[in-house]
Length: 165
Image (cartoon, rainbow, N blue to C red; front, side):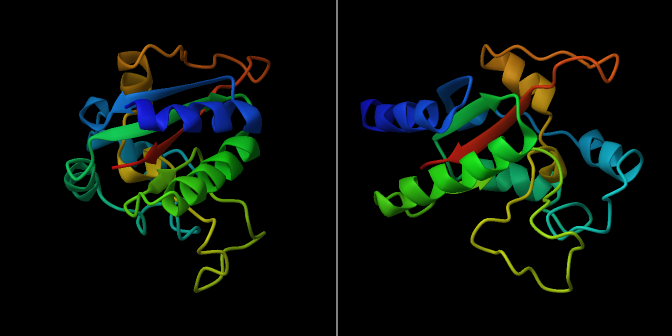
């Protein structure tokens, strides 16, 4: 895991609040998570990185099994997290970790309206929740803080994950 410490520094340089190397097996998936997208998010079916286009929880579980370690990042800006995960994924990939893949938070906003085919495949990534990851259980299991926001005045927390190897 020592070889991953430079990515913690890079995440810090990008402005994350906190970052940790976590075991991939600590990521929790659940079938109910995608239902929250389907019945609660106006991007469902409108965005190529969201359900029903994103991987199903079962596919996500199989993908997670291909990895041993991930970099989890925490921030307070929605767009910041999405940009950070793609930048970190690219750096990790270029360092020779050919399986590097990232997931951000919330729906992709690279285009005002999602076209039939993605124009930003180099940066567009699904969110953890779009792939059936229980973000609350996962971040809590890894020592991060997260709470349900009770009003729009509450400060948001956003999380992203980069699967390394």
